[in-house]
Length: 52
Image (tube, rainbow, N blue to C red):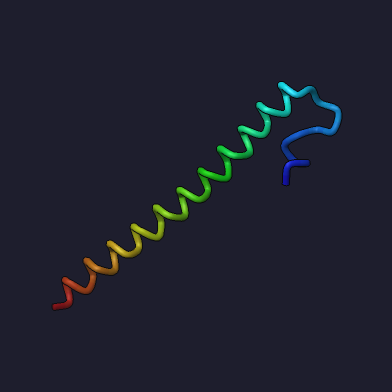
């Protein structure tokens, strides 16, 4: 996965910048998945409450 973000012959500064982008993208995708899961749980709870 880092090969997609960091070229082989880049400087250390460029490496750090690109690595931070990689971490940001990974965290964002995890946060999105977590939010979607929480939203699904809330919607399912609301749907069961309406049925009662």
